[in-house]
Image (cartoon, rainbow over all chains, first blue to last red; front, side, top):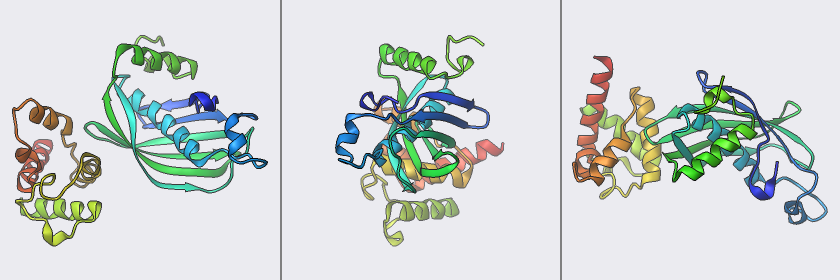
Length: 159
Length: 93
């Protein structure tokens, strides 16, 4: 996880497009400037970034479902719950399920656990648009490979 | 259409916190009820679920933007309900 670059997930562990599910891992770093302010002497992963991590997890699922044809942009966060604190150095297991793929939008439910213990959850809505430009799409494709996104699910990837 | 309208009106009332009695078949969801595009995603989600369809929002938006249709065609509730009935019928055909 590189918080400052908004790279909030580290690897795709499982992607099951027919089942509409994805599971990823994210390692909260020991050190980050974020922790200098949140909070001084009591470092905690900010809840908004836990939401973002679940949004990125959901986003990769949606991108996979659309065959890299659409980019999901976060539009709404509902029923967000934060059940426990996340200190530096913790590994997060994040799962997302596609609740609904509509015309130009998608709804997911995401959950985060650590050592099997529930951390947080939310229902997320995304607007789906064509990628703004080819460069962006290629960057997302490169990021997908870095995260271990299953290659057959990436256009141009090999089985 | 009437039962479809009732379902749609109830969805709108609940989703957007609009008094049910102010929602009529002639209400324009954007111009009269003030529903914005984000709220309409929630409505589309609920309608898709309730009727087992996928409202072609992107196609409708494109048609309006290209001048091939007016927003009345899709967003006046009696017309929206008729479109939903068409989608349900097409699905079960």
